[in-house]
Amino acid sequence: MNLKPIITVKNLVKKYGSFTAVDQISFEVFEGEIFGLLGPNGAGKTTTLEILETLRDKTSGEVMVDGFSVDRDPGSIKKRIGVQLQAAGYYPNLNLTELIELFSGLYGIKVSPLEMLGKVSLVDKAKARYKELSGGQKQRFSIATTLINNPRIVFLDEPTTGLDPQARRNLWDLIRNIRNAGTTVVITTHYMDEAEVLCDRVAFVDAGKVIGINSPDHFIDKLVASGFEREKQVKSANLEDVFIHLTGKDLREM
Image (cartoon, rainbow, N blue to C red; front, side, top):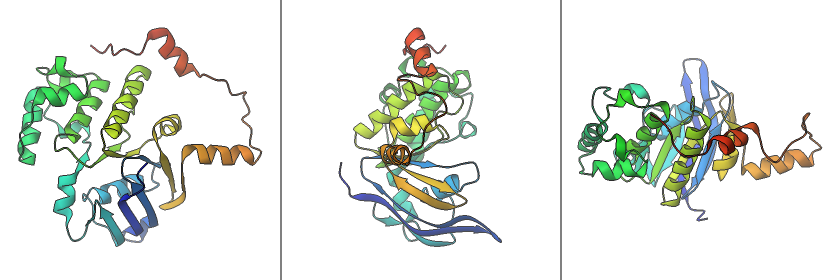
């Protein structure tokens, strides 16, 4: 892996009055990796993400994204990143082709809607309205919109929340494909199995502070070496694996 940092965060602080949401956070994200920000609700993950995306001002610290400062050159950063919108960010009565054309117009570029939809296996839904999509289809479409401007970095905030196991595994494949095509991915998730499978490195955040950064394997091996044992015998598969094995992994969304 190329270990050149594409994101550098130094002593980042975000305060709301007397409350410190992000407290002296520092970390790097390397080019071409999937990097996870993990932590409980209210830990400061989303606030950190929004500062990196230039959507929220910081109180202090230094943040560089692809060589540009969030303070001095947020416009250049916006051109280099893709940000996943929540469902409220889409016009529900427009079809997917119209939405892709709308977003490409906002970026000031021209793309092929069918090509973009092909990247997320939604060509057959090109004329479907957004509100008619299943949960998994909506998530895949939201990721398609992050790719319109051919970004260097994609930010995904809990992209698989609420999805069934098949849709979740297919979204994992999509995220890997994005990384394999050369795009760096920064993801937040509450699913630790997801982070373990997808992420090259993770940062655990709690109470606004980074309390550990390393690969999932490193953290797990270190815990096991300390003498930790699960109460229940660990098996080589889990119930989700059984579900996928019995029902298949093919997309069957209506």
